[in-house]
Structures are given as structure tokens and as C-alpha cells.
Image 1 (cartoon, rainbow, N blue to C red):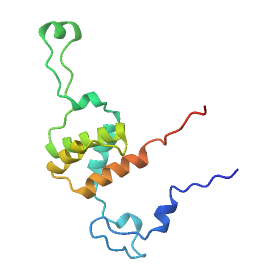
Image 2 (cartoon, helix red, strand yellow):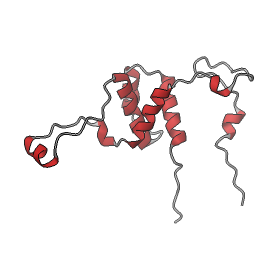
Image 3 (cartoon, rainbow, N blue to C red):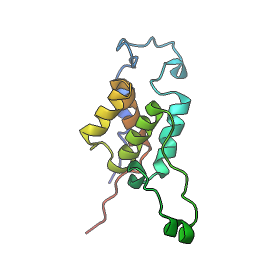
Image 4 (spheres, rainbow, N blue to C red):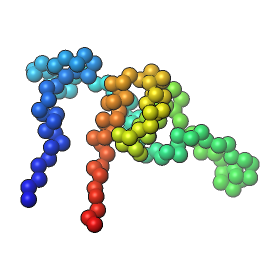
Amino acid sequence: MAFIDFTDAALQALPATSAFSGRPIPAETPFGAVSEPLSRFERRIVELAREDGLATLRPQRKRGWFARLIFGPQPPSPMLANEQLEALRRLAVQAWHHGYTLPASVMKEARVAGHSEAKIGAVIDFIGRSRAPFRRLAA
């Protein structure tokens, strides 16, 4: 029985196009020279969101005096101070946990924060490529 890996076949078969204009990229253009919708900083936020759980999306409750006495001071909030970056983090956390089946409200929240459709798609695709493939257990 043979195995053929088709994950890179589609990328090699399709002509390279710019993410912004949709026009083909000349063949002599180096691969890294193509402008990407995600900056290095935004990619780092997406990578850091991998460790965050869905509980970080809910607002943090303030601890009462008794809870502070037993558990200590309140831990720092996982939320980011910048609204655009926080919307990106929330989108990334949902995408890490749900894959391509994201709630529409998360994508709408990212659009309201100022992210383009191309950037939202780039985040989801980046996470989709980075996630471990789903493996079925033999019955």
C-alpha cells in the first residue's frame, strides 16, 4: 500500500498570487519577498494564543477578601491592552480550539476591530497548518 502526501501538491499546482491584489507574482520574485497580511508581531500573538484556554475569553472575576486570603492575590489578566491585538488573540484562541468551525461572532468581532478579511483568513490558515492533524483511532 502506498501513501502520497497531497498537502503541498495544491500549493505547487496553483500559480502564486498576491494576497492583496490577486494578480500573479512573477516567477523571479523570491518567495519571502511577497508581502504577507500578518506581521511578525501578529504571528507571535497567534502562537502565544495556542497556550490560552477558552476560559481566558471570559471576563475575569474579582476575588473577594476571603478568596484572596486563601489563594493569594489575583493573577494578571490574560487580556491585551490594545483592542486590535486583543481581537486577534480572541480569534486565534477560538481557532486553536475549534479549527475552521469558528463562530461567526468571533469573525465579526475581528472585523469590527479593524482586521481585514485577508488577515482573518491568514490567521485561520496559519493555525490550520500549524495544528496537529486529526488522527482516528482504529476501531
